[in-house]
Length: 97
Image (cartoon, rainbow, N blue to C red; front, side, top):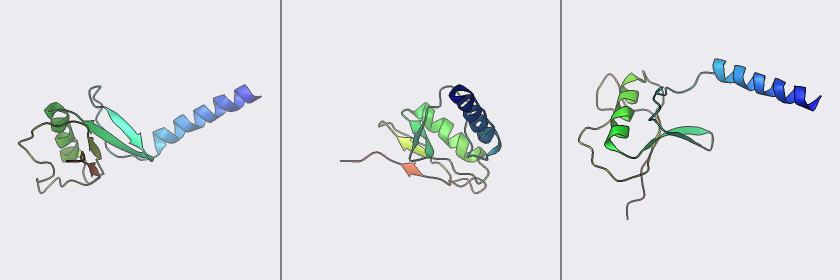
């Protein structure tokens, strides 16, 4: 009985994940995503991660795109300055000392 309940729970969770709208995410295996307090964040550790994040914001169409800085790196282009694709979401930068 307990085994069947676990299978049913797993199936229901999979169905819910398929039908509940979520924020926009890249289908990129190089895009690391972490979840903190129920919110998913893209982890930014390099300029390549930054460029993927910029593209996600540009493609988001008003959906939230969240990010966490996890390393120091230099960027030359800002995110969300394009009038047609403003940044919306949470950006958690590193603690600067």
